[in-house]
Structure formats: C-alpha cells, structure tokens
Image 1 (cartoon, rainbow, N blue to C red):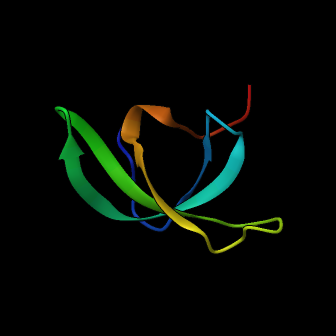
Image 2 (image 1 turned 30 degrees about the vertical axis):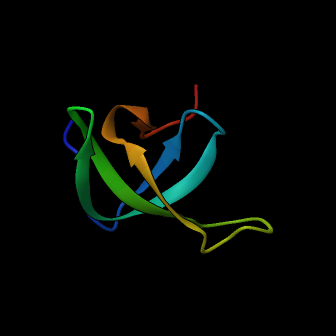
Length: 59
C-alpha cells in the first residue's frame, strides 16, 4: 500500500487515528513515517511508525 502525506490512517499497534506528516528515515531497513495523533488526550503527539503499521480502516 502506498502511504500518502496528510492523509488519515489507523496505527495498528494502538488503533489510534493518525495523520501522516512526512516520510521518516528508515529504521533497520523498514520504511518509516512521521505521524501525529488526531484525537484523544494525546492529540498532536508526533511519532515515527513503520509504514507497514498504517492501514486505511480499522479491522
């Protein structure tokens, strides 16, 4: 799946909805993205997550 900047995704580890900001440096060969949470007490918190952990809908 291609990740698009400024789009909403779900982070599969916590199922928080996040907005992609920009590609981040690779970590141990994994593609990474800088994202920020969009809701809850930690809204606006930024973190780098693996691209493979971002999905478009909650399962």
